[in-house]
Length: 204
Image (cartoon, rainbow, N blue to C red):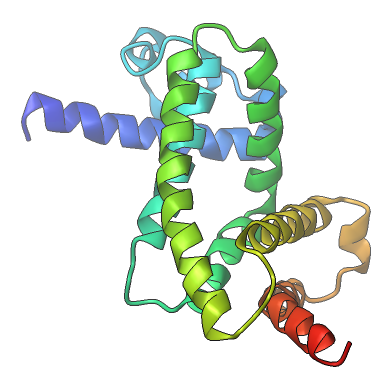
């Protein structure tokens, strides 16, 4: 393995372990000392891959967005499958969804020296949104729904983020019952929304 390939492999491992520590311990418990110890690396080696903890967080968020982008590029899947994959990506790891959202919001106002990473993040999202908008337009036309693409996508995101918050809540966890049943119910609800609108308008 050449030096560049070793660097990339080490970076992938750093990101994987950093995300695991972050999800297990929260922001306050995820220190670079703990990360270096977990990886059995010198702390200085970490700085070859990122300059600060804020930069590491942004790289983790971008990595997650790139995963979502790769998922949506699969043209073999129909819209309902893409929707289910997107929602399950968030609902199987609700703690990641909630935490990444909170960290991004904080960094957007307090982050230092990460403007270029925010630009990169937004470029990935714009690319993904262009694909999603086209796919959603085709789907809404195919089911003859009058719901707008903007309203539908906003509803899906609101439903997903709200569901992740509930699944991640220590209070609501006592009352949830089967998480898998709840996840399926949220996906069914998201798929039913544009059909319900068409049905309501038809009988109005």
